[in-house]
Length: 386
Ligand code: NAI
Image (cartoon, rainbow, N blue to C red; front, side, top):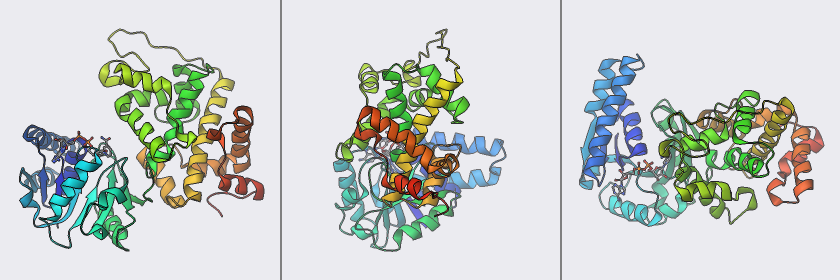
């Protein structure tokens, strides 16, 4: 099956590499000729590196390259069985592009968007045949990240999401099914990792170095929240936080922080800007953590309780299955454990007690416990064995 990719930026280029490596002829389109050229050079370099590392045979790398056909003409999508869009995150522009694509592709061609923050349903609504529309959400960098979230729109025909799941699994990826709700799985459930860490900072409980130390050294997370936000970039991370908050009809659980908003406004985007929470200028001194284990443990306990609560609520509201929630957080953001398994290990009653203490202290809706967590704690049950 020929696959069309529209948009050859960070995501489109990565997705093109994935599907070309999996054996599909690919049409890669971008309105910007320079971006297209850059994407091809990037894919070639990436394939070469994989071959050098022995992850791909030189023949397979060369074959993948020959399957890639860059184009500036959408008419070249006429023979595609699937088109994946990865252009600018703008609903009107995406809708316009799909209208155009529908005039070219066959009636059976599946249409997909890689959007992170728009509803799949809202993009599908612009299509004449919205029943063939689905979300296929890759993670950056697409060739390395195993997780892919598959999101059926309200209009998507029954069975299509499962067919796409099977297809994506054949690309050596780990697909999960998610409901079309803001942030899908990962960008929803991970919010407190950033938000609660910032809250702890704002309250003066601990500084960035200490919070990062606690969550990596004691919590087992691969990167601390401040180092990670700086790495992702506050332009991206702040925008996602804001869009999830807005899309949740301003649920206070997802409220962005002024601290990150100011970094965003200042252009202190993180690593790429040389400055974010940390200073990346050559020779800049780095803050030392306070390695007090009691303090560190309470930071981990608080952030983790908030993360588990998000996972519990996502499960309760059927955003995804327990199995997919676990897979999403361990492969999409490399959490050391699935959050539900983690909750079981700590025991739901203990996690609930942490949240209820916070709720009692603050009287903020932000700390309200999921009813599922509350029920499991009450009945002395567990997430993964009930
Ligand atoms: P990007 O800015 O790197 O690339 C977008 C590309 O689309 C550019 O090369 C641009 O020239 C092209 N483009 C824009 N409008 C177009 C049009 N009308 N027709 C043809 N080409 C057009 O953006 P990136 O980061 O690759 O994101 C693309 C999509 O993927 C967005 O919807 C984003 O939300 C989503 N996404 C991004 C992730 C990330 O970490 N960057 C992760 C997962 C999803």
